[in-house]
Image 1 (tube, rainbow, N blue to C red):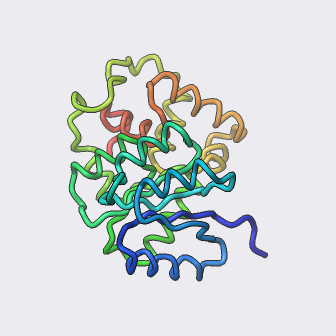
Image 2 (tube, rainbow, N blue to C red; image 1 turned 180 degrees about the horizontal axis):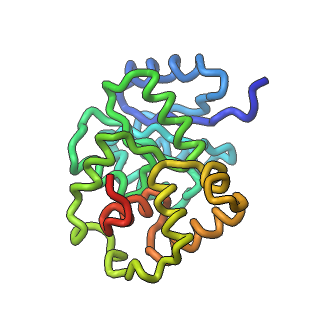
Image 3 (cartoon, one colour; image 1 turned 120 degrees about the vertical axis):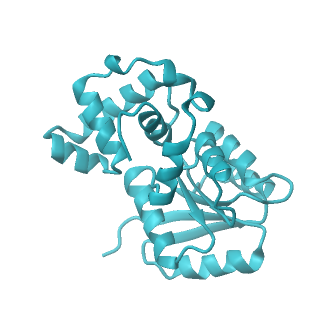
Length: 220
């Protein structure tokens, strides 16, 4: 029996590519594509004028009128509950870091396999973010002085339990998995995660991961 479907919006100006993704996703029993946008303006208009919002947006970076980076910034501010998976042909450090810093929950190159795309979507839904090995490697190389201002935060201010939760978040465990490993309730995990966001000045889980890597709380 299929539960609640994952609602997806596709934002890409290449119609042939977008339609290919559409037909691939529509074959998945737990996924529903609810809208397609050819540029960032169409995407923002849809979000502002419709009460039915997606769980995830597959966001192309290079689009006319309003590109994917700027659209992601706006969505992170106005619709923070929506997860963004950056979708691009450009697998460079600058693109990866830029998208993660503005709020993307994952980064997917266009030559990825259909299986990788489906895995990424499901991981983002289950865990809030998903970074593959190449993305995690890039994050370890980011110069800490050029990213988050929260670097000045003292690690000693994190409790032992908060550090444990943060380490498990960075290992890409879900709330339920963290609760099981630490013998605490999922609600307690959520409380620790909220506290971590406040203490580190991070806006989302992605920011927590960047913070932890840059401060060597976790070693990837």
